[in-house]
Image 1 (spheres, one colour):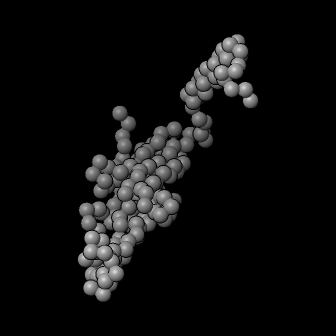
Image 2 (tube, rainbow, N blue to C red):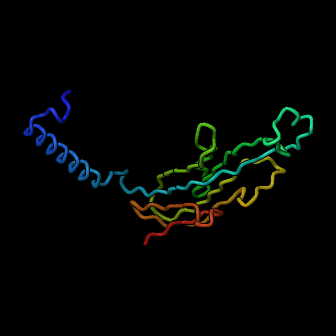
Image 3 (cartoon, one colour):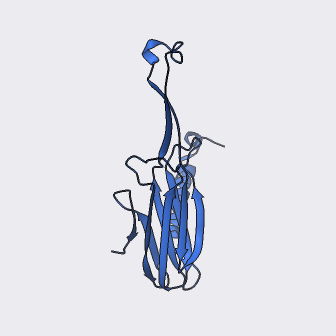
Length: 179
């Protein structure tokens, strides 16, 4: 392959023109609506949240700290993990999804991402979502709710999408209404 600086000027111009045509074609194709099944509506669950971290701490004895340099000593040693969440979705009394959603990242130290798109026939639907952290029974989460959900009716026409997402407070699910 010839470096661009070694190309004749006419060939450089042709490469630039070809790149611009390709970019314009991609931009135009990105505006084409994606076809869905005729008449379907959708219930979409879409959010990200920071998972609850469960920590178990123990007080370190003088014996535990004997080999540790003075500037690195600490009173407690804590180990912890970020919890999984259980996602349940019912539409019109039927269980549509029961999933365990895990934190992302190799060490599970990244946010939890939820994205589910469920096709439903147009009309009124009774939707119920629950999202609960799988924490030990005796654990008290600080500042974050261990569970939240949403329950209500959605009136969806053909092609409509009813979106449920995490509210601004990060403690509840809300329905996003069209402007």
